[in-house]
Image (tube, one colour):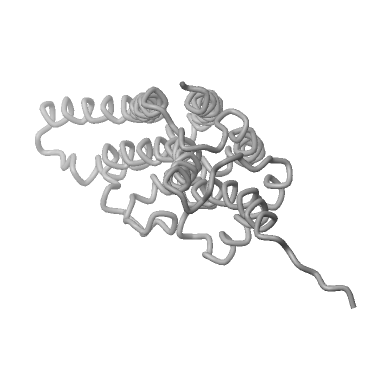
Length: 261
């Protein structure tokens, strides 16, 4: 019977070919939207990491002269996890913009007390914010953004090859600038509802001055909630358009981050 044996060089080559994409994919799954949340079981995350690695690794060449247990190799390990986590984080920030928009509306409508535990983050968020997060997930999958994200993950090994040199300071500054624009995007999505609610509050103030005997508090609270729901429903198409533009901008930002030198 013929014996089967692998030399040390062959084992090191296989380890180098599969280890680097595994680390980057693991960092990506850890921070990616939807799949990186607490709602997805850990076993499914592990299966997803192995599945993506098995598709990406055979198409990559092992980096020459980079030993995983050497000093540069350990630095490269940290860099690969950081690169993958950055790819997922940039997209996850878009979902946070939707959540912020829902929180802004909930606070203005008096629905801040109506909170629930978000299964994605484990923290308490207003129900309206959770609704906007679900809407972001629907837009994400309906626009096939998840496929574009996986393709970008594979292209990242070409845009930013495996090595001790990972994300640059310029790339990190691009991520910070992108995070700053998302607050403005959340305000844009919630601004129509906020303006409508401020107008209603102004009308209630005039009514209070004109007829002090009216109990505006008991009347205004349900009116504010109903108006917020109606205006939010009427602006859903604009929210969808804004969300699509945010996802496009996120992919463009990711390419700029990976190509930054």
